[in-house]
Image (cartoon, rainbow, N blue to C red; front, side):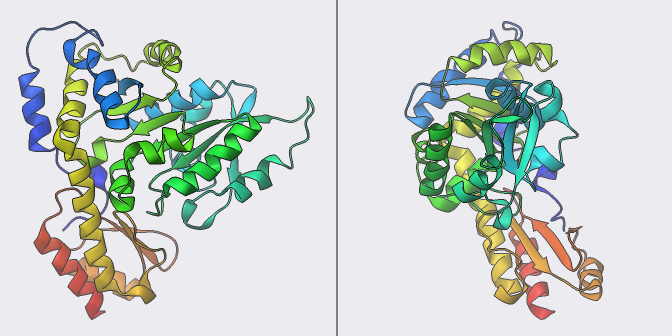
Length: 334
């Protein structure tokens, strides 16, 4: 019973069917019919005109987005536990050609205007100091917390006041939107987000993520950066097919909701006293002794150890109900 990561979840049948349907000759790279329709599909979803590009990985999506917002001689404010800071092997710095990441603090890996200001207000406005150019937030965060539209809007207002771009790492965007229950527009461009990395791989996709530009003029330059970075796949229609399949009839949102519901059931089994963070999306962080962790593994549960005395469980879009109920019961019985 695997609760290691939603990255390891199976591919949705709808995605496989869409890829099979796309298995015919069409234009190469992003000139095919499916890729050309992405702008319209995402514009409908976000209720405004956007430009969208597919890429193969979340690391590429985040790094290309930051490259569009931040020149090499400036910096990006992010949480110190952000994926771009800890888990992308320096890719953001590489893709921006050396821009500096500026870590900030916040409970559950969430940023606030106060935490962001605490970093940038200390930077003297002179030639010797790297000046910020952008802010990056993660929704849902690395600890499974979500931003409300008002929380994003407060950061967006700070970004506008300081002349900074705002990027959202939405590797688990479906889980965040399903948790809050808002329109996708309310937690992105209406709240001041300039570029969204829209995650699909964790949510039933095979090998496709999307970059959504709420300032469409940014997309033309990033399309060139995508080619230069080696992410312009010659058979891009198979990536576009995955995205269309998950957007159709809001399947992406149904998948996110299913993973969240599974996590909530496990959290109830664990009990509030064991939870390190509130469970708002599809990640559960619990306090476990070494003996308790070993007992769970002996029962067949797979999960990651986290900080000392803590473990992480992640539910997927298709997590079997029997596995969810078994884990909830096992945690309750500890």
